[in-house]
Length: 414
Image (cartoon, rainbow, N blue to C red):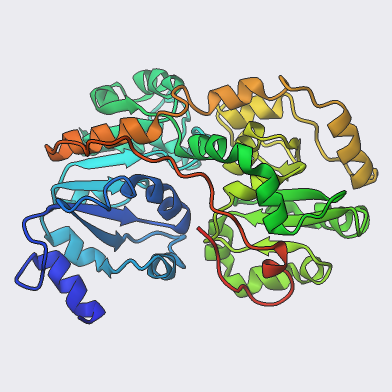
């Protein structure tokens, strides 16, 4: 059956299908980052013969690469315009754009470590209305005065408390389920040495992971300040370096351009991890994480790594977010001093409880995401759950860092 025929069959539910009469769940993917988060969700449904998953790519400014990412997972997509016309039993999404146009109940999920970034378009705010992150804002939850999602899944009880202030109409839809990345990192923590061996970290070597979100205030947006330190202030043999760059950077500038800007780093053996790759194993394996106000830096507090920040952007960050809590305790990389010396200094002063409050702010239901979300989805579909607990997979074993050093990417891992 051709890809086009597959798409038609998925939409029409006609005589092409071998397994008929399934509940149909539409997975709406806006960006690669959103797709990676949704993978944790639709994986809870994909083995059930009573359920047919259908995927569509919704329009988004950072939508570049989404179709290729899904195709790499063996996933066929239906056009967005066809998805708008079709009937479904449930919709899964992390973004907000276009959801009000769909003809099914919507379950919407968070897509990062807490709700970090405040709304940037203040023109949308009513007089006296506070800036809050998108998934807590009336602008992103309501359409024509109606709450669009039938269910809103948050990681922490703190989010529901804020929702009561920012958009009380949405409170009946709110559920606290925890964070899948927290649960997977904790599931893989015991495998740290195995991840390090797979990455090619030899005895006596240290791994530095540089993590960047997107936007002008990100590590990548200020890379000109960090670049000389990465190139000239780390011991050549003693440190391996990997860069984890937000998929929106690649989608916004293009993969070729991003790699062009990083030519000097790649030529020095620094691995640039592709946007479709699983990043959790690298955080677990790291000795140091140098990052910004993005989610990956906050998730680093769950690991054995010492976390250092590259910048502080208080005006963009919610004061109650994990990123804000981290900014209050993490050391900051400064110019004029050897980067190697700063890493050593930060390690010496790292205490086991230093990041505890940040780590605790990531989820108020640790270890519970897959169980709670599966129960919500099956309840929404009016189906009984499988008679076995959901599996929480640890991060997959990564390839060697050499896989991403030098020339073009040679794939990702899941």
